[in-house]
Image (cartoon, rainbow, N blue to C red):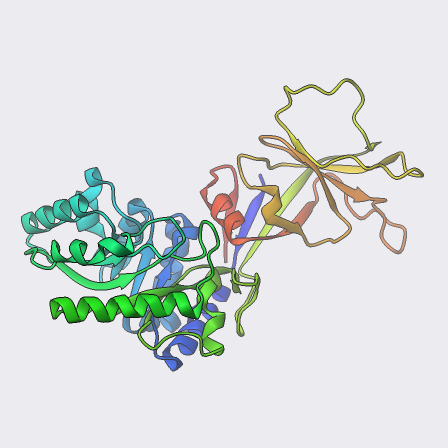
Length: 370
């Protein structure tokens, strides 16, 4: 079984470093842990570590996830942690939202009304952040409807509106520019003036927005970030580069070689449309007819091969199916002319954020937690 190596000390170090950076810049932040797929052991390690427990409880605003089952795990491990459900809820799930999420993101009036009734029945005040559409065309109230939308919510008995937010860079990749964030800031001013209500959190930032802080491109009103990728991978999707002094070594994917043979470069036979595999285009070099091909014990069900990079730069992707993947490993010799790889050995990869998310969610991948 292939394995995902998880180094919790690297994650904890990133939480500390990022918290110091954001506190210095007077920005609250929520740690978004959805990439962990609610893995109990990893979450227990994070929340029980003495060096980070104080940061998570006293400095980090909240812990966010897009799966209610994951928030349930978090609440069981650390009931004092403020939890945030970071996508609009299905109405049939409002009972679980009220039970496991202290805060939720919302965009639909009927859902908020249902949340209000459920919170009333549980004698709770549920906090919400209203998401506004700023061009990404994912979740968000249309800008022209935002005044009417808010007017229907502020009077609800068991709902407290604590902020305004937007999502940028996740679906179409709309950049979180200074102009976009200024627009969000202006809607805060408009709503506060119109309804004489304070919106404490203006949530306009995520890992993709982090590089703008150092460039002084974050308006003062934007005071809350939702950070996942930078904590777990050490990178910002703004440029896919390492951010600040964060570690990029928290995760490593290792796959087992289950066959290693010297084979033809091109398949033999008539190609059909019935194949289930995903392969590269064949561009055989004139002088090379064969190469060593390693079959590894993972496939499409586990991870997108485009999201993992072999640490050995000489290894090239050939093709993948549901549960096996083939790589060309070249001549398979070290500089001293010894065999470089053999059956039973492993090949290591750098996984991307999406690769980690898929691998964490695959029951066919062993998780090794350190």
